[in-house]
Image 1 (cartoon, rainbow, N blue to C red):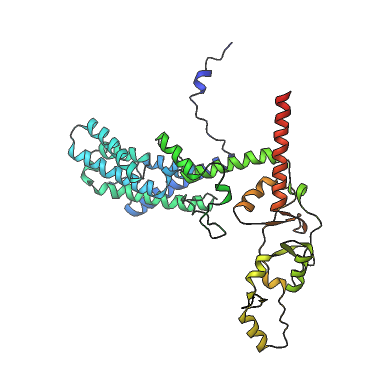
Image 2 (cartoon, helix red, strand yellow):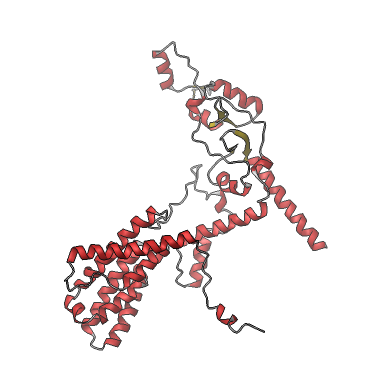
Length: 397
C-alpha cells in the first residue's frame, strides 16, 4: 500500500546533516546572544524604561548569526545595514501613511527593495520594518530615533556577541572573502588547478544566468564545489596512497653538513632536493636547488660564489671556514605527509603551492620516503588509464 504522506516528504528541505556538537553550539550561541544583549540593554536603560530591552526580530537574527554564520545574510553589514535601513523605512511609512495595512506592506516591500542594491539583505529586517509600523504610539513617539535605539543598539550588541562566540567555538566569523592566491612563480597565469575544471568566472556566470538570490556566498560555494571535486578525485584514486608511490631509499643530508657536500649529493644522484634529517631521523627541513641559488651570488664571468656580505664576514674572522652548513640554507618548516595519505590530497599542494618534493614521515616524524611530482603524475596517469580500461571492459561485456 502506497504511503499517503510520501508526496509531502518532498516539501521537507534537504539540509546537510548537523552533528550533535554543532547543535549544542548553536543552542548555546542563541542562548548567550539573546541573554547578553538583553542584559546589557537592561544595564543601560534600567528596568522601568519605556523602551523595550529587546525587539522580536533579534530572535531571527540569532538564528542566522549562530546557526549559519557563513551565510551572506548573517554578515556584519547585513545585520547592521539591513536592520537600520528597514527601521528607517518602516518609521517613514508609519509617519506618512495612515492605513496600517498599506503602511506595513509598503514598509516590508521597500525594505527588501533597498537591502538588495545595498547588499545588506537580512531576513529579520523585514520584521524590523513591520515592528516600526505596528509598534504603536511608543515607536511613533520615538520617531527616527527608533532606528538607533533599540534597533541599532540591539544589532550591535548581538553582532559583538556573535563575533566573540563564533570565533571562540571554532567558527570563522565574519566570513571574509579570501584573497586571490598568488602564483608562486610571480607570473599572471592562473594556478594549475584553476586551469582545469570549473573556475570562479564559470560559477559567477551560472549564478548570473539563474538571476536568483542564493543564500551562500560565492567564495564559500566555490570552496564547497572544489572540495566536492577533490572528494571525486579521492573516490577515483583514493586506493593509491603515498606509501604505494614513494621512493623509500631516500638520499638525505644532515643539518651540519656543508653546502658543498649537499650539492655533491644532488649531482651524484641527479635529484633536485634533499630532505634534511637530524640524528634521530626526524625531518627538520629540505634543501633544494632553489635554496642554493638563493644563498649564492653569480660573479661577472658566470662563476658561483657566496655573496659579498658573507665574504666580508669571513675576512673579519679569517679562522672561520667559508663553507656554510645545510642548516643555514635549508627551507624550514617543511611540509610533509604520512604514508597513508591518499595521493589525491597531494594534487593541490604540488599543483598550486609550488611543491616539487614532499617528504613522507611516519607517526614519529621520521623519514619514511619522498614523493615527487613525477611520482604523482605517473600514479594519476596509471589510475586514469586503469579506470578507462575497466570502463571499456564493462562496455564490451
